[in-house]
Length: 187
Image (cartoon, rainbow, N blue to C red):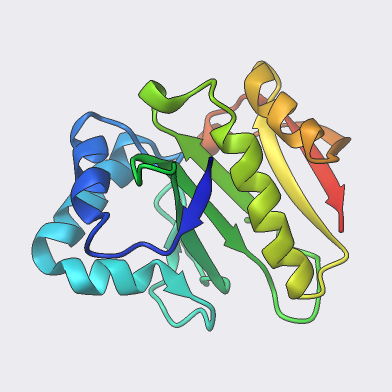
């Protein structure tokens, strides 16, 4: 069964192993994020783990794919694991206090990535359901998620959790320029 775990030192070696296999928790910045995270873990693993739970948005600004920076939103990362505590992927959740709206530079509240060797086992669908329970606890009316138009697996994950398409757009070139769908899940 799929579970969410707060990133910790016991799970860190499996996370690092996934990064060394060129997996990235970031579907936009890809291997750039992988390299940055490996360097951060090498420099100070405890600080890296602490940075993954930032409900007060105290961390450094977010670097966008074009190199510009924007203020960090409150948010956190949960690692997706199975009953054997095998690392399966990561899911992140970000929001603004007091509103379900997001700034223009934030495409969605939730992002997730499952390692290739754990895909097609229902981990993403279950992880999204679990993080939605946490979003409800914050009192948000809805959450938005994006997926590229050709990412049918992600569409299935989102729609299985009640998502409906609310927008179709082309990402800016700095974000890959792909045709993208925005889904909304009402909480």
